[in-house]
Length: 83
Image (tube, rainbow, N blue to C red; front, side, top):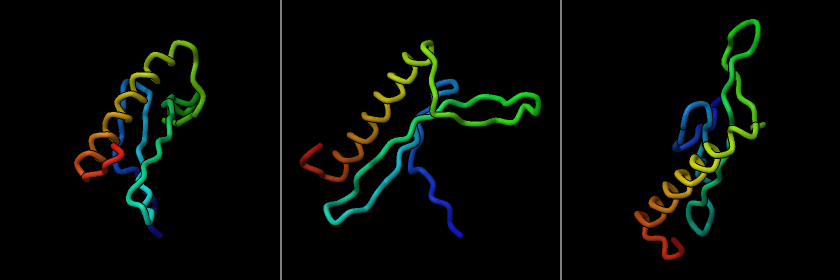
């Protein structure tokens, strides 16, 4: 079984934007999922959540901006006129 993987990730600290490629009849379209990494207690295993605190939001904003720029650059490199 093959597990889908993001084509690119943007990470600042514990905030991660995973960028996914979806092939359509009109070309590649991208989606982004956001998560925050944290260590669970008491096992210290790394986990992910889609919940963000107030102090996370400036980093979320920056990660989103970098993800947007990466997607925009990919579309431009692929010759997408809508980029």
